[in-house]
Every structure is written in C-alpha cells, then in structure tokens.
Image 1: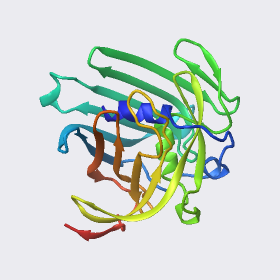
Image 2 (image 1 turned 60 degrees about the vertical axis):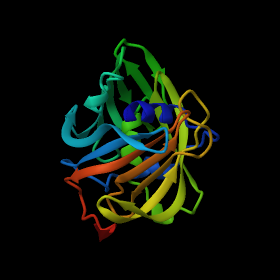
Image 3 (image 1 turned 120 degrees about the vertical axis):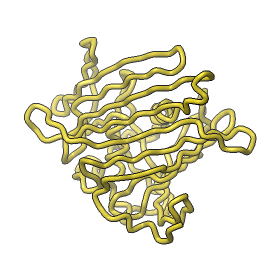
Image 4 (image 1 turned 30 degrees about the vertical axis):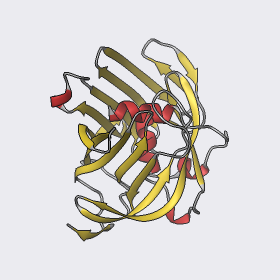
Length: 265
C-alpha cells in the first residue's frame, strides 16, 4: 500500500517549472552505502485511530552494470497479513543505479495488489536521453532522469545546509511511459519524537495535485535525519479518506553514526 501511494504521489507532483536543478544532477553519493536496510511501519488512520496496515523495506546491495560499479536499490511493500483478506499487497520495486551519480541504468516494478497485477521494466540510456520498455518501446527522457526509487536516494544527497526555507529543488523522473519534471520543497528543521527517541530532522514536502487518492496542496510531509545519512524517519499525508503515517521501524548498515538522535527513549 505504501509503495502504491508513493508511486501515485511521485506521479502527481505538480510541475510548475521545467528547469532542472543543477545541484541534484551534479552531486555524487555520500549519504549511504551497500548493506543499508531500513524498514518502515505503515499506519492508516480513518477515525482518529492509527492501524498497522503494513510494512515497507528499502535495501542497498552492490551490483555491476556493463562492467561499471553500481547499486541495486530495492523497495518492497507488504500489507499486514491479518488484513490480507481485505486487500493483499505484495509489491517490489528495483532500481540499478550508477554508484556515484545514482542515475538509473534499469528499473522494474512488480505490483500485486488485490486483483491488480502489473510488471514493468525500463532501461535508461543517460547519454542519449532515451528510455526503453520491456516491450521495446522507446521514449525520450531528459538530462539527468531518475526513476521513482533512485529519485528518493538522490534527494538524500542534497546539501540541505545551503537551502533556504521554502526553496524548491527540481528533478526529472520517468514513470508510466512519461517524463515528469517535479520538485521537493525544503521546509526547515524540527525535532521529531519517534519510538527511538528525539531526532533532529529536516522537513521537506512535494506539492500534490488533487487526485483519486491525495488531497491537493503541500500536504505530504517527509522528515529525514539531520545528519550525513539523511534517512527518512517519518512521512505523513492526508488522503481522500483518512490519512497515512509511515514511521521507521528498524535500520542497519548506515554509512555514518546516527548523530541526529539526540535523546534516546
């Protein structure tokens, strides 16, 4: 469910400027390394009570692509088994990316949600700005084009210290045979209380357009650790019926100490 909502969120980001941010395209990866695994609990709230609706997990493993060093970024999402009889979700997204730029070579998704099933794979040629599907269909992309998973890891490498409050960071991503120019908005810093304790956090948000699931406006909020890891620790967003909260459940293999955890429970 979370990965499905995440996909719709990325696909419905409001594009107001086609300009590409140089910062996110010229950066190198300094935020994570192979062996990182972060697990999240997904909560659904419809009557003022949060219900454990499922789990999502993001992992980083080493890879090679045509002899070049790469990462395999994998995201899986499963509904809580006790609710499978209502709506069963077993999703997997996979992105193979350049280990330095995080630009994707290959992307696939395997979606199994209730009676809906979809498999798709994309191959990216960043030199010719072309994306080819598993059916052999070819689409034009743009300089510095991500998929929805590599985009998340790329944003983790932003230098938030040099962003002003309400400043927008632009990037391109490709999904459903279409190129989406989009952005994240930096909202400043906050202290966030979690089950681990209190974190110093960076607050960012996409701008959503109203759709079948999400309400419009800058309503989805993402908090990432205010340290060199920049791992998401919480996501909150209202939806048409109720709201969703995603909280970090566990983590391992971080590249740096979790210095943003300033008060342990």
